[in-house]
Length: 182
Image 1 (spheres, rainbow, N blue to C red):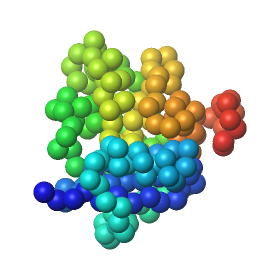
Image 2 (cartoon, rainbow, N blue to C red):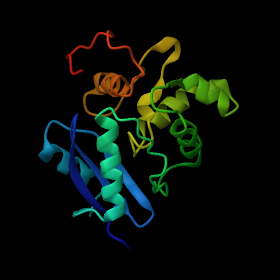
Image 3 (cartoon, rainbow, N blue to C red):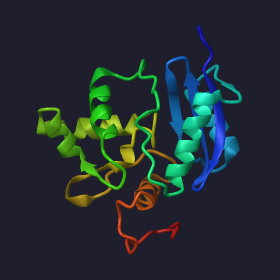
Image 4 (cartoon, one colour):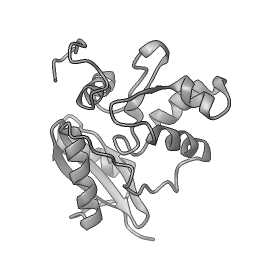
């Protein structure tokens, strides 16, 4: 069995992490309270994972993520994701969500309708919460009905989601922010 490797890297929003295997990125993690907490989370999520220097293709993915989080108009659709542990339903949801362009949003209900059943909106929300690849699979671009933020399971919760959407230009600059991060 191939060992999963991970690395931490700096971005404009803090220290992030990603893990990779032979099929692509296994996990992407947004900042935690600090780097030590992020390392602990990576080891908990991926038992046996080893911290290591990333290979060239992962270095390119890191650079693209850093650019996106710095506000540059970057498309992350080229980054390979290892979806071996992702359910078929979630793969379908993620395929739709991954196609949402930077600066745009879609609702849980809209994704459910694209899947053929508007009653799947809650299941779509659950899939977003299980996303192992935030930013690269942009779950932050998926909103609740009526423009509500819905949930966001990354550290910082909905405020992090709001921050990401502001960086991407999906929210007006005058949108109030609890912490004034942007």
